[in-house]
Image (tube, rainbow, N blue to C red):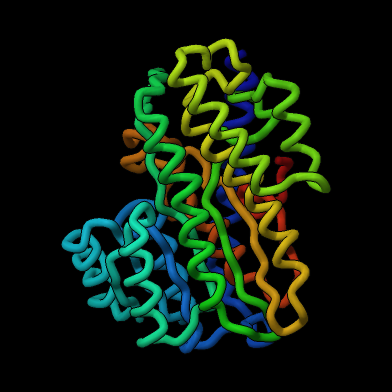
Length: 314
């Protein structure tokens, strides 16, 4: 068993080294579809992976809006990057508060008119280490799933119409995979519904999380076939993964010049506050795939799941 763990660590380290090298190669002029006028929004970006994605995107020359629920912390985070010469702006955003979302949209319209990239990073997790409490399931599902949907719905009308398409990137997790190694969904009926991408709808995803929360309330969730580790977080990310596929399908019907591409990615087990700093990769490496997806040259890649710049299965 130790041998297999060592092997996968070796494989991961090798891939992260490759990615670090790729990050040093500048985008060529014909790959760069963006300019300093291109606007990206990153939610939950006052620290960790979100902050790092803002830094990397601004480093590529985009105008980046850093958002945070806590205004003081967000202003300070933006100031650090502004002092480093990056074109970073700040606005408060609480993805659980409709009035906060409305204020944010009004500000975007007034100051920038529209945006090109939306990275949904805001999220919560109350389980660290080997604990697996479902005490905060409502908050986890509300923030990670419904909050993400709320901001996407509000921002779609503000996404720029352009030949290269606008981009939505959802930060999710391999823990939300339907046949994950560490967090498998054993409820076969639910798994079949979520795997059938042709019949998958937003209503099916909503019903799935509602069923989970109902079982948590009734105290029957442990026999419901839900993932065994980080259960509420895994279910929330499973829902975001499924919703990304539904969203991509809907957005693909838009006419040329108005396309929006939606994908999701797993940053890995990153050394951040969310993992209790117990992760095994840096925020810089964790942010990389999200930035890479946001900046993909003019290619209609949508409805996919990525990790370490490679497509993985849902």
